[in-house]
Image 1 (cartoon, rainbow, N blue to C red):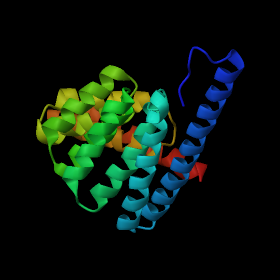
Image 2: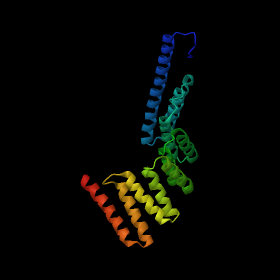
Image 3: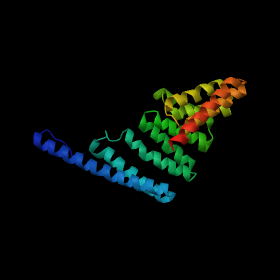
Image 4: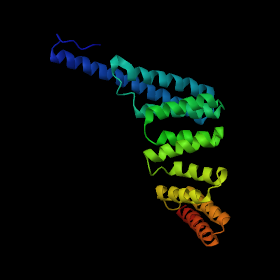
Amino acid sequence: MVLRKHQTEEEQLDIIRRMTYAVKLLIDEAEDLLEEGKKYLRKKEYDLAIDFLNKAIETREKAGNADGIDEYYTFEHAEYYVFRAITYSEKKDYDSAEADYTKCVELGGWGDYYEDRAWFYYEKKRDYDAAFADCVKAIERCDYSSEAYHIRARIYFYHRKDYDSAIADFTKAVECCGQRGCKACAKEFYMRGRAYLIKGDYYNAVKSFIMALKEIATLIVAK
């Protein structure tokens, strides 16, 4: 459908309404397909998940490109690629997973998808330099990116033996989390304690271990 100069304002508004409705129907269909794909991902039926996610992405792209309406092809579209990337990763098809994580980064623009790709590089591909680079980008875009600090701290600790930087990032990960009785924070305090221990700073090592125990105790009480 195309708007033309000779059309009345009412005719143009009617066309816009119909175009908007058509796009909404496509998005609704894509979201239904996405939910099916996520369902099969949870059930570990990865081939079926990929089939539904492929259809979801194809349908979502039609909505984004319908009649030149591309404002729908935005940040939220990246979610479709995230779940397909996770599915490919579970299938150990790491090249396809990496391609989808990269597409998420291109579509997303925020730090979240750099975090996702950093996790993929760290946990799946064991490409620690690539993971580190994505953590830096995630933090540049979102300074309270707890997961990015979490991953980068481990790279500093395990792979670069830079314990001062590891301590700083473990501390920052806890600050960004901001929760009490948090299992993740307990791990950060524990790892920070190990870093202090290696440095021979026994006072701060013990202090960090105690803080880790406090997080666990708070978690247990809350249950």
